[in-house]
Length: 598
Ligand code: 8U8
Image (cartoon, rainbow, N blue to C red; front, side, top):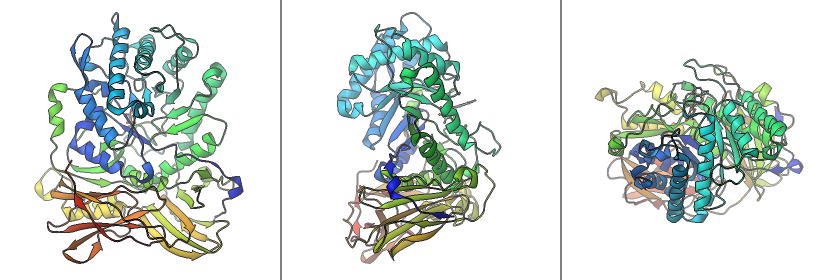
C-alpha cells in the first residue's frame, strides 16, 4: 500500500482526544491513583489533558443546613490541578446524602451548594483556571445513575447552571452525558435547553456543549468484536436529531466523553492489555477526524474512559500489581465518608504501563495540519494513517492497522512517501505491536506472577522492570536519511507506528532537570524519576544508572517519549537522565536529584 500525503490539501487539526475519566472521585485520595496520575501527567505535550471523574460531590460533607465542609473535595481537586490536568467536572454526587431530589425546595439548596463550591474553586485556583474547565451534568441520567426522573433532572440542571452563574458568570456548562442513543432523557434535556426557561432564574436555559456516550459494543464477558463505525453513526443520529428538532442547538460542540471500544471497564478482556487497544483507539480517533471533524458536524472532543485502576484486561492505563481492587465504581457505588481515611493507606503496589497509555504518547506527537488520505480505506481494509505536519515542517504520521475483529492477525506494510523531503532528514519510527513482546506477553512468559495471594507468587522486581521496559514504544528506526523520504512502515495487525521526520538538525537538545522520588513498590523501594519535558516534537529521554564513576548505563532499550519512568535500581545507584533529540543527538547526562516524596 502506497501513501503520499498531499501538503496542498492540508487542513487545521486539533488533538481532540486528550481526555480520560474514571470513577469514583474519591480514588483521587488514594496513593494508587495519585501515582497513576503523576505518570499519566508525564505524557508529553499534554497528551492527556482533561479528567472526568464521577461522584465528586460525594466528597462534600454537610455540616449544618446549607453549610458544607469542602476539605476532601479540595484535596481531590488539588490532585488533578497540581498534576496539570484540567477538570471536566461533573456536578454529581450527594453531600452527606443531604439531598432528596424529590422533596420540596431542593433546587434552591442545590443552586446555593453549587454557587458555594464554585466560589471556592475560583478562590482556590483563580478565575482563569476555572474558566478553562468544563462543568457537566450528572453522569448518564438515562441509566440508574439518576433515579428521579426527567423533570427532576431538568430542575437539577437548571439549579446547577444557576449556581455556577451566581458564582462566576460565563463558565462552560453542558450535558446530558447520556448512555443511550436518543434516549427520552436526551430528548427531554435538549428540548428544555432549546426552548425552556431556567426554573430558578426565569432566564432562558443555557447550554454550552452537548455530551453523549457511544461505545463500540455492549458489555460482555465474551470477546465480541466492537463496531467502531457504529460509534460515529450513532453520534451522527444525535446530530441529525438536533438539526431536525433543535436547529438552535445543532452547532453546539458535541462531545463523546465515553468513546470506548466496549462497555464495562471492569470486565476482563485481554485485548485491553495489548496493541489491539492501541490500534483500536487510534482508528476510532482517525474515524472521528475523517467522518466527523472533516465533515460539517460540530464534533468537538472524544474521551477514552481509561482512567480506572486494575488489571491487564480492564479498561485502565496501567496494570496494578498489589494495591487494592476498586471494582465498585459504577451506579451502585456508595461513598462512605466514615471510612475515607482507609483510602489513604495503600498496601505495597507497582504499576506497569499498558499500550492504551503508550499510544497517547504517540498521538501527542501529531501536528496542527492534517492531510487527508483519500486513497486509504482503513474501515474496509484495516491499515490506515493519520498524516499531519507541524508548523515548522516536521512530519508526524501515525500509521495503524486495526480491524473490528479481535482474533485476526497478519502482516502489512505501508510505503510512505513524504513529498518535499529533499536533502537530509532526521527520521524516527516508533511502534507498538504484539510481535515484539508487549508487557502482557512478558508477564505471561514470566509465569504470570500475580500478587498478593502468596509471597512466592508476588511479581519480583526484575520481572516488573522487564514488563516496564517492554511497555515503551519500540524504536524501529532512528537516523538521518537523504531525501526524498520514502519508508516501508510495517504495520502488522494490530499495531501502530509513528513516523516523525524533520529537516536534519545538529542542535544538541537542552539538558533535562530530572528529579528522583523514592517510592514504595510492591517489592520495596522503587525510583520514580521525572523531568519537565519541553514540547519539542520527538524529544525523548534516556534513563541511566551509574555507581560513582564511569558513564551512566541506560536502563532502557530505547529512549522514552514519556517524561517519567519508574524502576527498581539497587540501593547505591545514582540515576541520570539525558535528552535525546529526534536526530538521536543527546544532551549530557544529568543526575536526578531527590525530591520530596509524594
Ligand atoms: C449501556 C449500558 C448498560 C449497562 O448496563 O451499564 C452501562 C454502564 C451502560 C453504559 C454505560 C455504563 O456506565 C458508563 O460506562 C462505564 C463502562 O464501564 O463502560 C464506565 O466507563 C463509566 O464510568 C460509566 O459512566
